[in-house]
Length: 437
Ligand SMILES: [Ca+2]
Ligand SMILES: [Ca+2]
Image: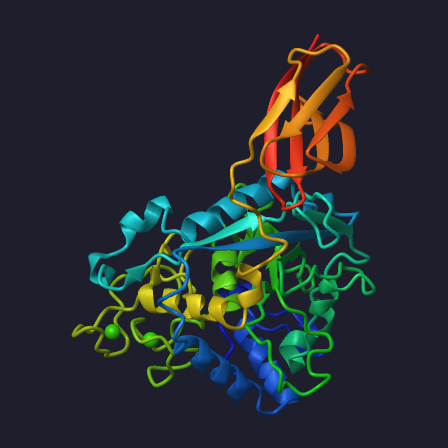
């Protein structure tokens, strides 16, 4: 197993713990997850390869919908003694926006991609929406908050013997984290602390698609499907500095872009090896190892992509370059992700009761202004719940009832402007403004 030394050996030199050296910093542990499972269950890596080929060769790959929508739940797990771990909603919203920009090629820095890659760059056209209904059918913000029973879920064992057990506790209510929502219907993201000895040891990891009917029983014990991100690496507006190798690392929310790539089946662009190891994607230039920084002179492997030996694609999200160097996926990577959504992760995007309806809700509220009651009526849906907020975002009234028209008592509200959020049983939300006299 090759250790990826990324941000300077000064980070770890000289530190020891229980006579063991602290391992070098790992930016992303997803490849190690496969190796660890291979140790426990020989044949696992081959099986992931097999799944990878099914997805890659899926006949549905090119004939799927023009875009996909994936419901997302973000589980913020924090040590109550360290309140900065309890990241604000605005960071979550910012991160989801970044994810949507990157997966729809709307990120402004696509202009920085070198023209060498114009022939291969692609847009996944995948939308990520914070869930609006939870697994019980109730309205939700798509964000959960859980007090952890520890400062960090990080543990040396993942580096010393590939044991993900301590890290995986973040995904378990019983073990001080929080259980996932139905993993076939929601993409679960856990955000928490994985420091080891007070040092950032990794930024994230994700499970590759592995709905594996022939995966030996018991292997998945302790391994739970989803994405885990170090809390300082989440969003681009995060006030918590990500300290690596003695300096603050520029965080633009691309750790999640990278990890979701793994979740949707992509491998590291350099194939986790040298020029003889491939990532399984025909149009991604190979590289002799992971790229760090942003050295645009690098061309470390000879390849033939549509007749060209392209330079190392530092711009690719599946490399280890600086976050402000990354801005693109390739068409081959897009096809693979679509193949995964048409196969192993089919239930996320088809007939998903958790999916947000994109239909525009038509709501009528009256009288407006009002003194005592507010009538709320939906012309094209069934109301599941309504919530009234003041201009400061404080929720003042919450009512759950199922009907196409309901009446709210607003007589207790002070004079002013209010907003009512109307949820349907299909997960759609409408927001209307009203005035209390
Ligand atoms: Ca390749
Ligand atoms: Ca090359």
